[in-house]
Image 1 (cartoon, rainbow, N blue to C red):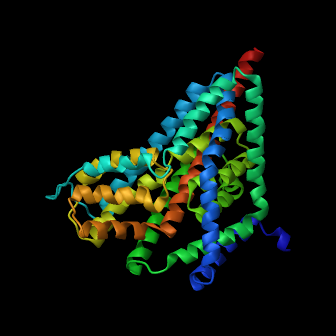
Image 2 (cartoon, rainbow, N blue to C red):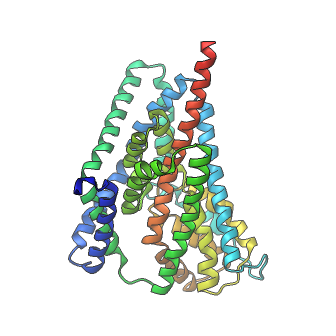
Image 3 (cartoon, rainbow, N blue to C red):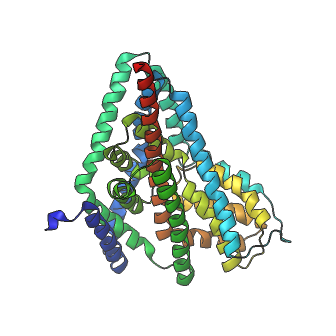
Amino acid sequence: MLKKIPSYVWTFAALLFGILLGGLFPESLNPVAVATRHFINFIIKIVPVLIFFALSPAIASLVKRGLAGKFASSVVLWYVLSSTIAGLLGVVSSSLIFHIPFSAKTTGSTSGVFDMFQILGKHGASIPLLSIIVAIVIGAIAVWITPLYKLLNKVQKSVTTIGRSIGYIMVPLILCFGITIGVRFGARIGMGHYLTMVMYTFVLCLVWWLFYVYVVIKTLAKQPVKKVINEYFTPTALIAAGTCSSMATLPVNLAFAKKYGVRDEVADFVIPFGAVFNLNASALAYLAYAPFVMSYIYHFEISWTMLFMAWPALVLFTIAAPGLPAGMGTSLWAATLFASMMGLEDPTKATFIATWIALSGGLPDMFRTVINSTGDGFTAIVFDHFFNRYFNKNNNSRGK
């Protein structure tokens, strides 16, 4: 009877049980949390290598088929548009919820926009971006060098095999991830505010998830929703929730997308590229957080004008700097941007930034990571669907 229970049920139960254990016995289980964080950090450090060996053979295959330019530009455009739309949704929905006026007396410096991007060269944030560039160059060169092309494909297949093998240890791994999250909770600044932030983030992410599933997956890609959720979304989402990192989720994301049926050259390009380039849920959330933290908690006077000024800056930053850890990356610099625009000074500025980071961590971070990571897989499913139509069209024309 136990064998009939789907694996995703066991992994979900392991995540909840782990969170419960970590929350109840934080001191005793702290060594487990520390070891798990080291494991996650190790995965994140080798992600640029995984990106290179997944992306370079995919680029070579696309170049050989004459589709590299068209396909790559379409993927980039998709990610830019989705992040832009998500950010706009965050501005409009939160402004309406918190009754933000169109204009306010408060004006501040926009220097925070420039300060955000100064972090790009620090803490290894640029390494995943560089790995994409190198992978594109080497993949294009491999088209003309057969031994190199064969080597890249051989290594890529090994990476895929390793990703699939994680499934055998998924339950204990998820349990450790859950323990880590439970230990992290500790004391929160204003538990009531934090719980409100959790529910607020959940609703925001749910709305964006429903858009992807029922508009993009069901309507655009014409895929069976139940199958996508069971075979791809649920197992990938649990790993994403446990790691709180799109980068650390990458190997499993690739494995489950391919298991669902996405062809290698599509998955190996779209998902690694998205892990670095696509944080549309973060763009949605951080622009929606601003009215909550600034107006609802701190009672600062803000306006639609300020939010629309921050909108392109935050969208660009989520595209350019996803390699940073969430707590000290996009969250930190979103808070810094709005603090600068408000003209806040220490100690108010420091308190505001610390509050923003504390409220956006933990469960809200889990929700954002789940949507960011699985959004990459959903995108791969969509592009795989249109690739099938393209190939069928070409084959039919050749037959004539």
